Length: 192
Image (tube, rainbow, N blue to C red):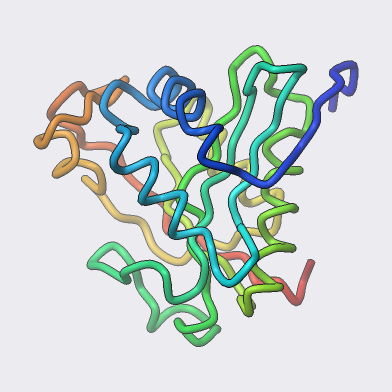
């Protein structure tokens, strides 16, 4: 891991949302983040006085962010398999999105954002965290990164983002007819 960057980390705030939207759409594709969903996703990370979302800055430039939903602040949908989780769904947070600027990858920023989110989620009462990882990421790097951080595969979900694409999300690989596959993965915090 490279370490020649001076990165600062902090809990996410509404003041970060403009840069989060810009970076998220650059990395994931236009329409991935909007003013409305970014604000809603940010708010889902709040529980009491604890925020499970974090940002990384190099001076004033946002170089990474982790959106994490607090337990009971997210909807378990058809893409989730709680019957396969070895934790009560009421005690599972959701790792919505981890994004790092491509010029800043390899410095451990994603791992540090995840570590901070896990600490905050544990304070909110979570014992595990679930995520859907993009299998078509370059070199399957999303799944490899999450596995390295302790993630375990739960189930594969073909066409996970197709409905989003049909409703305006422009997948960077498939355009508006996305057929990318998601790996539903879980991290159990007692191992951390």
